[in-house]
Length: 431
Ligand code: HAM
Image (cartoon, rainbow, N blue to C red; front, side):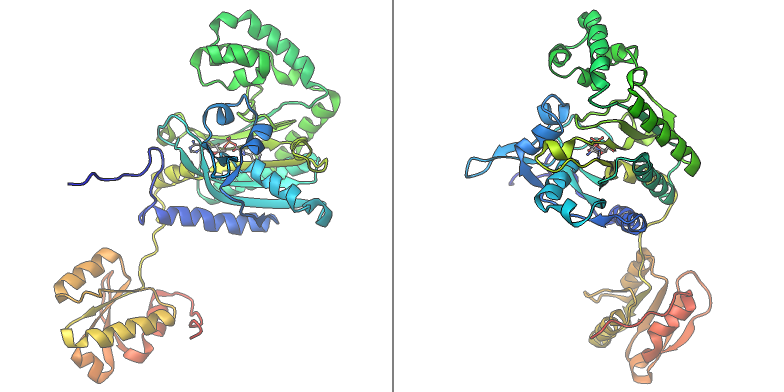
């Protein structure tokens, strides 16, 4: 027997039963982000490797260890995108968007790739829903983004998620903090892992998000970045907190949170869930301000702020909630005798054109097996059609939840089903 081929490790199939949750999350994203004035963008899944090296940072785990990088046939180094901020910034620059509008709000959703150690909530192909706003340096823009995530998580019905907030300062105040941090880390050098010895020289902030437990213990006791903020950064951070409070968005200040990407300046934040279903992969979303990134990629000097949520993790939480997502058929059409199969098939097609969700067994089969399928499908109504119904033009609509059958004319089924289920009458599709 030939060997079975299975999906690549860390990459999951999404099948009916679960996909409805994904579709629900995506529908809500479009609706809610639209309310905030964000427009969708779609960028390629593959980018020039240097885009991520120059933005996310060479010393980060994402670029240093986790990227899927390969040479194409022309010898160019390409990478599967590990995140969406750098590709969005690349597109923003490439299409000279600043010349068209001074304030731009974009969102995206799609797969990202990181070669990570797998566990619950951590995959190698995972999905993000993210948004980026370019052009505003004001605290109100940071707060708008965090408000949007908060409303998004609330609209999904997710609870017990804490917004962690911090500021990383900017190029004016970060050097003094770095100096103190390096001094502290050098004093604890023996306790740090080999990677962090290197990071100490190249990018000390990265020691603070090392996944090694000993390094985390050292980081937890290090100097707080907030004590080093210069006046403009302090004012900005205060303004962010004041505005979040005014909107009723709850948060906690977490001075140890630095995020795992290099491009941030000032505000950084993470939404952390406390549900056991996520295990240690409890961060459902994160983001922050990155005022220097667009310029460093060769674009204009434009401030920006954004976030991304991990959809896989949101879906894990939604699976735990008691919400129902699957859309069931309005009607199941069962055929009582083989001679009526074609007429019933034609009727099913017509009713779909008229806007009903109709299930029909194209294989025919016994009435008993069709009724079993109808039960399983969760259809609201079933019609059993045979020679008698097609001759008289009359049938009986059976409500699957129980109750008396409802007499119906065969040319009035769609209207009757809608009226009986309380659904709004919709215009039939154009033919
Ligand atoms: P990030 O924190 O690296 O930020 O990823 C955002 C979210 O993606 C995480 O909070 C998590 O929910 C999800 N995620 C990350 N890695 C995985 C994985 N291996 N499996 C499942 N889910 C995962 C960014 O990517 C930034 N681009 C966010 C941003 C946008 N900052 C500014 N704008």
